Image (cartoon, rainbow, N blue to C red; front, side, top):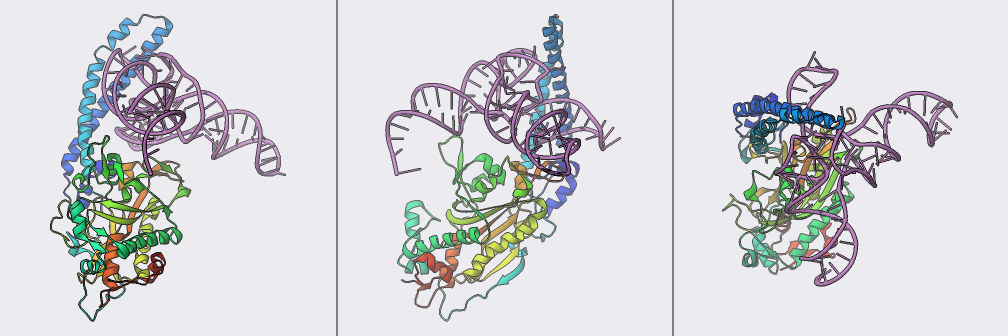
Length: 427
RNA sequence: GGAGAGGUGGCUGAGUGGUCGAAAGCGCCGCACUCGAAAUGCGGUGAGUCCGAGAGGGCUCCGGGGGUUCGAAUCCCUCCCUCUCCGCCA
């Protein structure tokens, strides 16, 4: 949610900024509603004031033993008028809130203009894509060859398209990756390890921005009240830990790390990435979430992105970092770095992490605040999130980058302790 | 699933229709006393929102929603959550 004061006082400037990410905001319509709200609210509140005063007078008269009937007559039609004003006000406020919840975040000044990923800006690259003296295979072929380690047919049999079954060494490698990432982030980067529910209520999803707008991207649980959704990312439960809280300044920054499955309906991505496990309905991810002071959040974004990069560096996987342009950013983000890992099977860089600063966008929705030490007053804090990393895609990257001519896959050195000392996955 | 008890401010905890946003205690902040600290005394100390240049003022909030009433933390309905006992269960 955007700052209501800004929205109220400067709707045109908001429209201009939202245009940078390709969002059309009808500032005039909003201003009109806002004017109505103001009028209705002050009318409602003065009626409430009137009622409160009269009621108090009745109470006093009663206590003093004076007759009350004339006073009761005086307030006879107040109730009707108040009810009418309240319901009008509510209508306008609902309309305003609907608009507010549907507005994406304002892009940070440093966000490049553009419509889609073609306009993203490469910030840096690390490592060199490997060259093979044989035809590089993709993870689907490699996984199948490794004793059915990646079994898409089995996934389809159980659950349909975009599901996979992993077996044996590949399944263990997948687990090893997650364990390794958790250990690095807790032991070296100071994040607090967390285990969270994979089903969350609508409030939480509104808090982080998935609802009300992106309902069709989520899996819902049937026949359960109140309604629950499967989390599309651990960012949802992690960030919402701060919902409704006021955090003291000396507690910040807070950093959470969590390994969880993520569930996405992938509505609207029909036909994209249908091969392999690049785009699944269910995938594992190690997620980082930070809560920071507003003046620290951009420095924190740089740190958080580095924390994700370090995993790739230690795995010796080549990658690049791009700054997303306005049109390619997610709904809640003010600025996003994507980390793209080199996939020999596709001979291209593919997203393996997305690190965003949402500034106070989510915090306003969640009522997540910190106490400003100078004013002593609660103010929205800033939230950041980043994958570090997507475990499934990381598995793909390891398989493809570490493949050998004979179909074996070398296990990255840092993962070997998690693999019982094994050095190779063998067909 | 069955039976019962509860949900009040940072915490403990009073409050069963009328100046109650809420006693008291703890905590916290300020001041006084002190060389300093402790103890003590005095004062202050919830959140949201609106109007206003400001001073200031209004409104809302006692788990959520709805209702009764001139007036609800208090009464009624409903949902959620917590606790205890029984059953079941990883």
